[in-house]
View 1: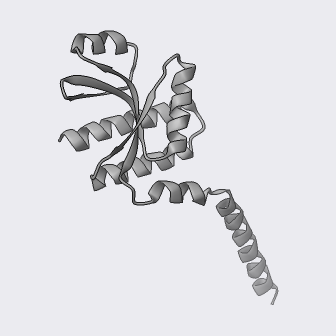
View 2: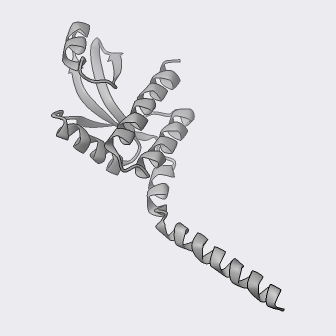
View 3: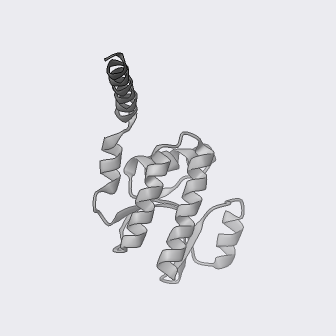
Length: 149
């Protein structure tokens, strides 16, 4: 009898601990990110006509994605599916003296959609600006690999 009571108390305590951790989890941010939408927020640093200007003006940027389109070089510092993350990234870069332009683009690529969704979840659980920028560096590399290959 005592053993059964003791085991019951342990199960209740484990349930309380697990339940309290689930309350901390932000389900609304997960739902906002995982919805099937092909819209992406691209955070653009600038547009350049010459490659030399890109190299000169972005040499201090460790992470960037350069896309050549319509005889212009577009430089992006972030890609996300979540507006809050886009705002957070813009704020981080503004502190560093950069003004980014937010462009919403639609891309129908399931692999890219899934990758960026996963990276957005990581960013939502990150507090450090350095962690966020490191994750975003992987996002840019992922985009380049998936779309350009």
